[in-house]
Image (cartoon, rainbow, N blue to C red; front, side, top):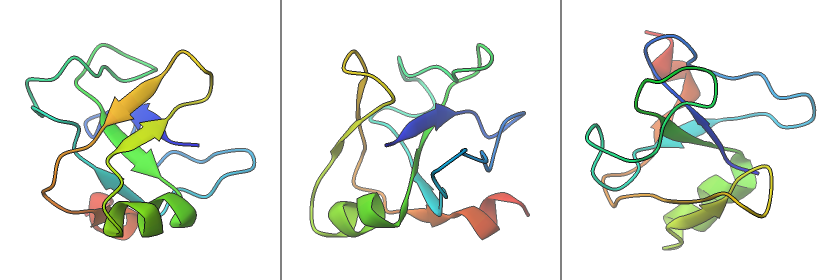
Length: 86
């Protein structure tokens, strides 16, 4: 399950049952309609290892924590969670 969080204040989310390993930019980032779930900053799409494999295989639409949310990633590539901490 993908999650939207900003890089400014809420990078590297810790899920209860999900380990987020990378993030991808949504289409149009940073001028995107995708907003962090915890503040009003532009958000990125945090993905788990299965979603990272799907991204590498060409999938660009990811589902969020409910059926209401779907997010479209751009083609710029995934950035590891370790790099977000720098």
